[in-house]
Length: 438
Image 1 (cartoon, rainbow, N blue to C red):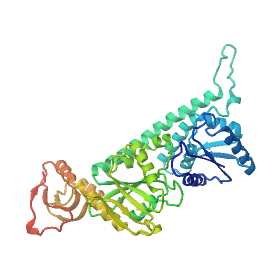
Image 2: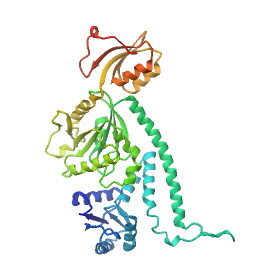
Image 3: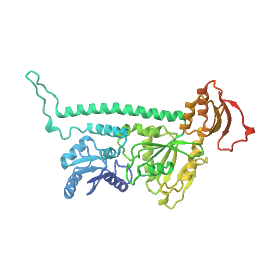
Image 4: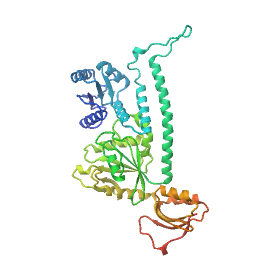
């Protein structure tokens, strides 16, 4: 059974928000038997809703034989406990419901650790519920009897120990992920991250543009764990695209803090693809919700490209929108049908070209086999030929990579044969300028 407050402290369209909360309940596996709307201008410190409305909820729950009450608001531990005593039913607020969905959907080791840690922190303030009958004291031999630990104190201690253990494990996993992310930073390959309100079509777009296999479904929080793929075929050269968890209004702060490693893909990106549902009348408000979460995780200053998805559900056509300076700032497309994906690739190539990527041919001595393999692994080599004096590599890479390459080779006899800025045609052989790489 759903309790749906509206007005006062609740943002967004009440009808849309109520439908979204019903979708959250369905995503958690609950069957909605009844809804009770409550206007909350001044939250009641005891029940959040008024006493009369709480009695109405109890009667409605008894009429449909409900066994759990879901409240579309973040309740304080006292409000949650008081409602449970009054209704004699389990009460779950919005934060608890979202945490339950995340617990069901997390698949990676890191994701499971993050969810469990957030759940334990949420539970820590609610342990007093249901343990009053176990407040007995521990005994012992004569002379050793003392106050001991109550059951509540024991659970708090065990919970604290579990939180410390999970924190240590998560720090280890996050260190590994940070090292992987730093490796991509060293590669200087542009990094792009998909962000947006949940169910906006991010995973569908990710699969369409990378030929990936990320799970996508018409449900809230269909995917949680971050997925990173190489993005090929751009005019600026290869890039890295990361799919992140969808955002939702009133996302629990503990969950945002716990998923800092996952959301770091957005914070460390060079460009954010902010995906929105073009057919959603409330899309501007939802975009604001996403921007607020990005600010909270420290990604508010990362450049964004607005991607208006599901254009096939509107009367519009795929197109690019440019600002007054002629810069692309919005792309209209349909990830499901593939309409406009070529426009998105063009926009990405244009926006990421500012990373000073150039084409060059480098002669790499045969002794540098490991470096040769690393350049291939980074996707920087477009062609090569082998001569007696080394590999002649055609590179499409940021200029910084060539600077690092020169520094790495030191005094080696490597020669930078030619450099062509941007996508211009390559010069004829007699136009090559021979420059010392070192």
